[in-house]
Image 1 (cartoon, rainbow, N blue to C red):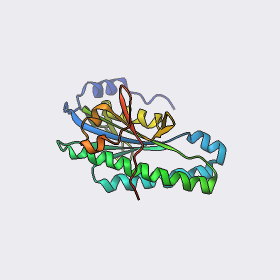
Image 2: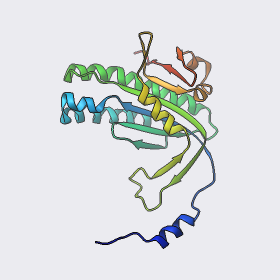
Image 3: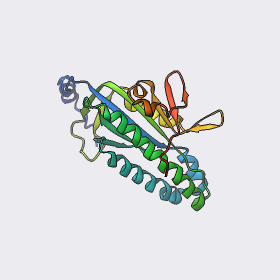
Length: 210
């Protein structure tokens, strides 16, 4: 077939500046299914789809219901929702309360999966805030694909936190982890939910009372 790489055109595109040079304040909320590979080996591919698909779909509904997220990144066995603070500190409360929505759902979903598939389902939730995030669309990539580039710490840290939760400390399991700078923006009543604090992150397992 031969090469389809053109050095001259690639170099021209490389030297053409295409970024906004504008930093934005971004909150990322990440939800990640734990041990999905293990799930496939224990209950099979078809049943794994039957578990993960409705879980992600319901998480998306809960994220949309809060009305504070403007973009979503689907990542295999999880989803990351992006909120632009836009000088509205109520968005910190909205994002945190959405995490409680999802954690409440996880507690019920774990029971349903165990009853139907005899499998110990679990998922973690991470939230991070970065006031210095660059956001750029990737040229020539269709909009239906995750075509937005985020350069900052919010997404990577939120993803990391959803990967280390649930976290068990002294026989207490915490499903929600947030960065300390995000925690500092919460109202005092919400700060009371966090019973375990490490040097970098704060943890809670709060859910809504039925």
